[in-house]
Image (cartoon, rainbow, N blue to C red):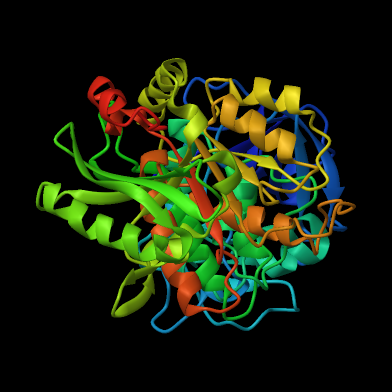
Length: 562
């Protein structure tokens, strides 16, 4: 009730006739007997002082015949303009009664209270009278009685502020403190538009109150997020997909979560939706700073002495300095063991307690190598990518000009609460040139590919992403890329499924934290055979981690991240 700006006062030809409540930005519900013939009708929102009355018209009617006991005493009003505040939240139909009784609060406008007044009531019993009303009785014997001016008022739960019904009649006597309300399920019978706004009983009042408070806070703070991505990130596999037209606002996404989901998984989705929204709200707004990573750089390259040999250089970075560890030309069959030993030796140069990061710098035609699947130790077959945050980068991005552009981009990305992904799908019509322009924009961060780099239909897009340069590129080695050149990227496409899941996972993850997020995904995929992230590859470049480019260039002239 603390921020219930949606309470409405109904005025007919300048005279206050009752109350109502906002259920959509331009829709108010009230009693049919409150609006009379609907001529010269205005609605005021007294909890928003200074807001002028809004003209309204009756657009739906419950069929009320004019008698006090006649059914269908409901009117739907359309406002002349949308209101810039949150509509009322509705509670499940059975929330009005319980043991012990639940306190209900009514906000009406009886004579002498043009600004409104409160009354406290309870439901006498869950039994409907004539399938139409629940009986209300005063919470306190000396409390405010219902009277003309309360008609059309929302009946709300005192602890959550959610609406369970609408006052339709008082007792007719100030000495008898009872009345009647039309519960939300009966209101929905007369106006089907209400059905999609009444949540299911699976969600507790605490769940709904928390979600509502978070959405209100996000709306006030102007949080920049895509409601479809937020829902997709929270949804269970068996939850319905978001509407094709998307969500017009966070409010519509929250209502969809509360009202369209049922079954045992619904409560989990509500909690996840709220958790992700809370993460966006409370993401720390820190000053730009160098991420707290201590990298181990493994550079692999063509040796020039034949396909069976690989040039290897291993370095460690600690406190802004590079420490050469080992280098040599290695036969392919010894490569895994040589790199593993080099990584182990590199740890001796890292400052104790810092966050390690293993970075593989590879030629472009090796970027899809499964280096994250290499064994981490002679006596431990756990993959490297399940033990350490592990990324790859491209030799060709070593140029000073590319480093300069990437450094500027990362200074901007440090303050971002989440990684915004630009999707490159199988059936996408975006030309490589247009993709380059998109990735050069200030809000560009992550290019996500539904195919592996070798796929001919998107290889030009991959090359453009590397050259743009996109700070982060992600794809799946098992994505849509083998013999599916005609794939349109629709449902059933493995690449689309990967991008959908990836989009949800990076929504609230700061770009600097993506290596840690991918580590967690790889651990999950290692434990689940069919996990969507099995084969995930992360190309991630932050040149600030390699802070002595001149010394590096002198010692390792071919290093891609110097």
